[in-house]
Image (cartoon, rainbow over all chains, first blue to last red):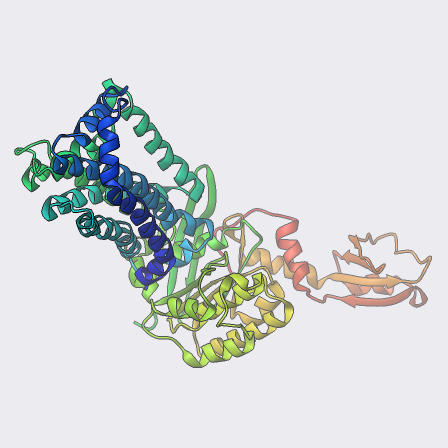
Length: 270
Length: 303
């Protein structure tokens, strides 16, 4: 019943989020033939201020249109859409999980029902996770069909691996938001703390010498580009002895914050 | 097994930071008992009920509900309890019917007859969203959800809050019928007079401690010697008497040390318009116990 209630509360937001993801994805695919020509002629991309922008510029203006298109998808559908909308959805839906219940004084009702706090966390979490992650898979997978309309091809499995990695990034953010939500009394405070962390991480990402310490280093073009190009495969994503294992760190981060959320909720005194 | 108390508290205390919210509280509630918990705001009533449901962890002492420790086995306790929180806890985005269904879904059984009766009494528009309800209607819905569940123990934290006088009377009728069915109920309230009519036993909480039975008995003894009288214009009290209080209608309240009839005999008949001796008004008892203050005790009840 808690899961059903949670789903009922967030389903409209999930639909709007799906529509926004699609609205951001479709034009960048349909307009690719024109954009490719523009990009190749762009002088700005050849000499940008940041090294990561330079790599993006080189990637999306590659002489091979197939490679350039994959890089374009990595930038637009993953580096941009997943990071931007995925984080927004995580923060919007995650902040409400517990802090809003405390604000509206319904958390006491919920926690005094004959159901364990672990169950309360689980039944509130999984519908939220589904509503945030499924749209990423659906919309980004639909890019394969959209690409055919412009005579371009996107490889199915590398795209799913990129989806998996993007979802793990969003999941880690959602788990962190859930943890903060379980600790804060006011929803606005959760948004403040999570927003503060995200903005500071973006700030760190934009400083070349500090970029390696930014969370966004795990979800940027340098991650998605190799995955979509087929150069970063499942073992390299998850097994540290095969590579940098960026997906593993995201998975562990999500698990850690889920555990911390459970502990916070277990020890919570209203 | 049936003789085991439903609730057993032995020197239970609760501390928030530097504040002792509950201090060495002792209490035993038998099966089928209706316990009234009286106390002003901040006395520790809600904290006590939350400790019983496992929402708060006690700082010290021993607490057992159905023989189980709420710190360790709160889930099993909550399976047998119906708890009404002190703050109105209803989901605004649900309809009344959806909220009821949601609340009942956690419990094994509900009492549909009681639910129907309460729904009729409260006349709630259950098909409407809760956000359109008034504060009183939301409280009625919360009460309906708590009482429609079939449980071994009902922990009700100020169920009459935000209810008007008519609704309080109707709620009282429902609670009386539950008492007659020998349901174990612990109910906290500010409405001393109504709770006194309902509960089989009252306990008075003050600053986290129960007021001793002896102190309550003393207060009642004092009230039995209290005289309320109205004097004719210009008439004076005998020099030995001093009015403790002058009421809005001109009546005087006098606490006599000795026999109150002696005071009345000392007033000429023509000067005495009305007199009332020893009428125990519950608000007076409340005033003596809470407004005048005294040393807190760790145990005690009023039968």
